[in-house]
Length: 126
Image (cartoon, rainbow, N blue to C red; front, top):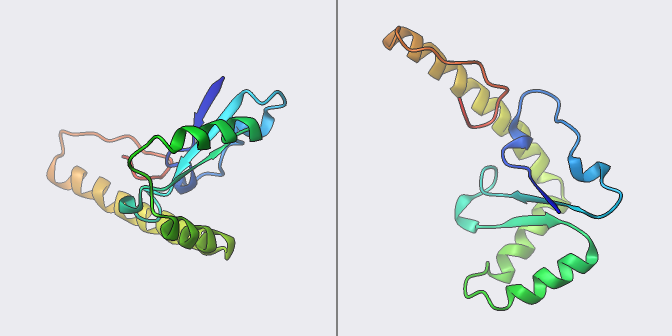
């Protein structure tokens, strides 16, 4: 089994690479993602793309967890996604993060000339 984590992939400046899960023909890749970077860290919502059997097993295990997001939060995010608002949010965030990154690189070169930073492909990391 391969766990593919889509961490920060939606916020990259370059065209996203094809997810390994999209090439999976044998059901051995599980794609996991989170709304923490794009929507709201406090919601603690994520998602899993896997076979129906594995999803069923994971749901059965989830009932043993004491902490799980309230159903109303899950429904609200599902509606937000289904209406296409998340895609628009990601576009705005990518632009904002790009501007912040440019300002940070400029500040580093101006105030810390002995430091060097490498150019990143976007996201929340420098």
